[in-house]
Image 1 (cartoon, rainbow, N blue to C red):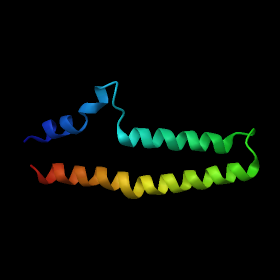
Image 2: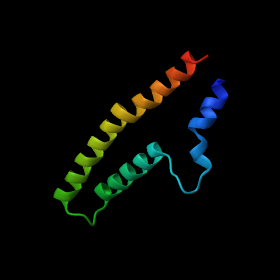
Image 3: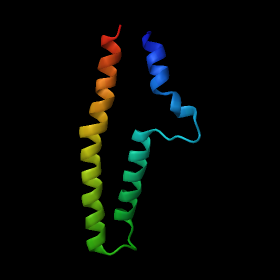
Length: 80
């Protein structure tokens, strides 16, 4: 299998309006949590909790999702 066809297969869901890529969905949710933390309408203690959730989400994203994307890239390189 060529590298291009493997990449095409992995990214095929980007053109599908009914399926949002998992990584983008995760980042979108995390951005919404950060927006809540920045809102002056939210009580301070709740804003701190949102910041804690944001920090945890970003940490998990890099530990899990970025590692998975890197593994996919290494798999594609080794598949040549």
